[in-house]
Length: 254
Image (cartoon, rainbow, N blue to C red; front, side, top):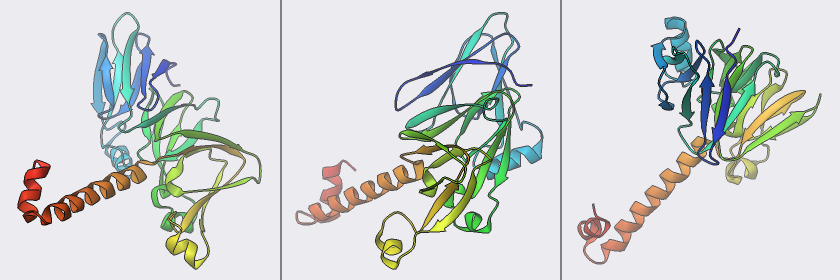
């Protein structure tokens, strides 16, 4: 039985979830996500069930250790957690969702004490080989609240039986276990080479709920890396006419 917790989500594009705990209640969180906590909250860091569970979390992209924040005081106290990059926090009521939900690796933020975070693999060879970020998934199990984070804007879809949706593999955040997940080739030589969307898409077939993100962290990181590289190249090229890299370094403050 998971603890019943109250929460408030603050912010718009850089969100934070504040959780209010009754005496004796606790919340588990990924290491390094805590922003602040009030008096009475005690941190208890462990592997969350032994070395095997710690290793399984590492495979999904999380840390080996997980921290439980327990209210050991006599009054209600609050603890808050923030996502590590711009985006949204999605509350998942596992009781209403059938007790189980699948999400992308690295997306888990925190959950009520009693929720289990397990590793889950895609069921098909194609999804495993070409699914990119969707190869290894996290399975959240329990009867309480869990929170995952995603980049950009969140799109919620409720697929009916037999209804399909094709998405970029990195844009998939979480989905119900009833949703069939597979990988599909884009098709067409020019589409594959010059389409700019990758050569494989995730195909989701209902019934079930699906959460998508408009800006996966990998895409954001690629854009930042490309922009930084272009800027450095431009600085070196612009400085070449007045003295080369040495003067370019002086002008750029390096």
